[in-house]
Image (tube, rainbow, N blue to C red):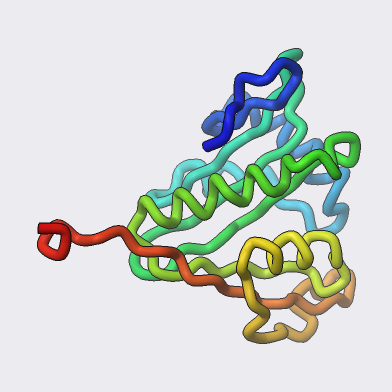
Length: 165
């Protein structure tokens, strides 16, 4: 991962239970009626094969978070969020790169995600990172009447022990 020790730059660290109040507040600000419930976050943190990160400023403010589900050939981006104040500074790209790296380390061969069809900024980020749209889920975000774009990218596999010898 790139240098997280630059002065003033948010540091990516593993999400812990004590981050949840700040994470849920940020999730609500960004996603409104589609924000996760506290039960969603607790279940995700407790589930096997889940990897969650927070982006924390030197002052201790959570300005972003991201989550990955792994287990088998396909991994899935569960969520990525960056506070409005921190958007446009490359933090979303850093979080996504960390998730891609996590998928790679888990042995996944592909990485999937859903993104709101009206979230052009996020969809552009994913396309620049090598994701391609493979489907549309009509009415996926039913509470707000918005479709989801289903996107996927290949994850470069690491050589297995036998193929590396």
